[in-house]
Length: 528
Image 1 (spheres, rainbow, N blue to C red):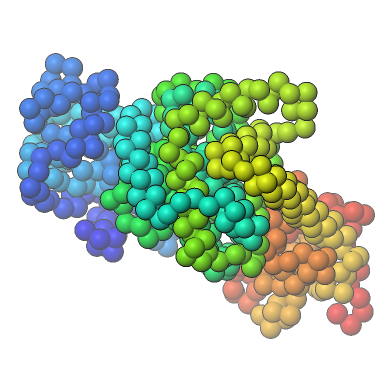
Image 2 (cartoon, rainbow, N blue to C red):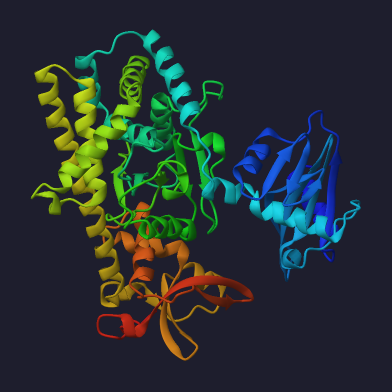
């Protein structure tokens, strides 16, 4: 059943607690991945096509496979999608989330009360979300075999050329960061990794419309991605779009591999930061997956900045270097040479991070910088043997670090300029008008005064806000960051204010008058 059919079916049964979606007769019995989760659980056991729960034997398995929300004019209903597996029969149901705890019965299934309870227990215990986050599935053997196969295949491209690699680093600012990312992604699942690289590696796009820049970045990751299964389609790196406040859910096949995260909106961005912050005091890892904040090293693609304490940011230039075929071969050979000794790399990185922590200058570095420093030292040691090449690498990596810090500082200063500019309405008093009474007046208005819940505000038109910020030297790619800075500093209303003009409602960014530098809005000039 496709998404449109699912929505139509649920809309037709809006008053029901449980809806039968489809019934199919597959060729196999229980899915192998589900059986793996059953075997990993402490409660259920599979035995000869049946399932044993305590002293009860049942011929079915169940799991939650997804969720969907149906919106109408006045209500939003969420449903959990589950599948009940019988030998050679599968039934899919939608259960209204508000009725889940009441454990409603399933139409078409003749189950006892205890068996109905077991279905819901299976969905909770064996759910993919919970299993991927909490359960430890051993992926090291599979990962090792895949890396071995991929690195062996990469060697057919030729011999790694140090001088060619140095030339690539000089011309391509993305070559070194993607190698650092794939190295940290490769050691993530190693049980010998005692210290956790507990930070986000963020690749910041110039803006959301920079499609060619994004495609070029994905091409770089595609080139160095030797962590994926050889049977996977080699089109582009695996990317998870995070569109709500739920943690990223990795399938077992993606655990420990190179996975790109793309947060959409403020909620998933905040969730990523909060997750890293919660694990910020964890210094040691066990071999269990739940000790790590994520199932794979978190590599983020975003147009937004992240706090420097929890993220290492790589600012992607607008005119990024496009990989030629020879460049891609050189970069892939470099990744293969790094990953062929991934087990030793985990131990080396752990020892190096411990040594660096004892260095008297370590206080100057936060955790992301420490890990990137160690990763670069390992890349230098593993790839380069010639002293001239190593000296050139030191110059290039030092310059890259300086450029990255300058870009981060410049970005932060520009955002601060935008915030300061907005808090001084005298700087743009010519753009402030009385509240527009028509849509035509609204289209020509940049900012206007408005009173909401007895509080005077200055309201900004969203279509003209970016043009206003350009007066302060803020480009369109930083407009969202300025708005976020206003929210983080509690300088604007927590929610956008809804205002009606000629019957048309729209939400606007608003700053309370008391937040301005002189706690007032300048008088509207005569003629406006």
